[in-house]
Length: 147
Length: 158
Image 1 (cartoon, rainbow over the protein chains, first blue to last red):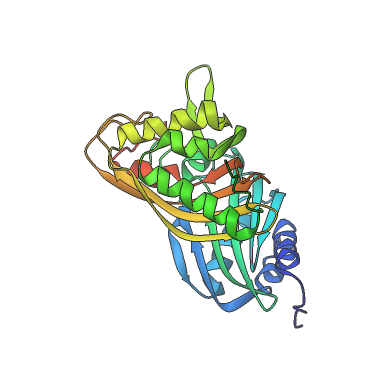
Image 2: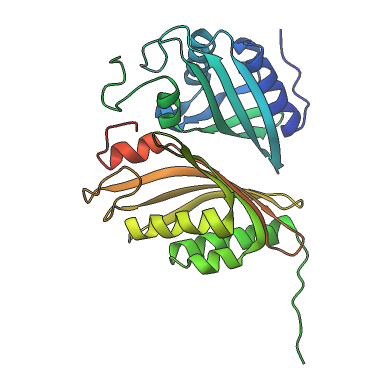
């Protein structure tokens, strides 16, 4: 099935976030250009293409099966739409090197999307990995996997 | 005769205000930064939280109280603190979104991080709102403190 790409940047981003919130990574990825520039600053992910993004989204969905994604605000500035969101969930498996201790995560994040011809052509994400580690009971940056 | 320059708020003029804000930040002009803001401007540094035994200090409040204190402390701890704006996009409603790298070399303690003379540079995302009088009335920022701490040689989460 081919996605219909006629929306505004705001609508495209809302659709992406709605798909992600529904844990439908495939539907979210369908809104992203194949050569999109992907930067996930806290995870040091940077590259072109959807594979890296798919890996990031898949890991979140798998590690936090009760993921609750709340969109606080979407700010549209030309072809850029910046979403301020909150992630909440309970860790159910290892995530980003962090051993699962079944801790609850709540984390405010900012996702900056560039939308070109109805398709997301760039994503840059910002959150504080220190806050994430703190919520998941990690004590040291150099010993993330040690409980 | 006194004339008043009354520019209308547009995406361009809002961007100019925010650009000036980072110019003044680069010049360590904290009072000048605050002068670009409205008297009661909101301030939220989302990652800023310091966990003590009985309370958590957060970077939420007003520019005049919380913001100026954080900016001043950061400049004291990192005397060569600087910034480099990568992107700035805006709309006619006064929203300005900025991607900027901020960094410096630590000379004094910053939070729980003791100085080891190390340098950091970390990408930040700022969301500003500029009001009809071309004053910043809201600042929200996101970045990764883990990135800063590890660059400075600090290995403990708290």
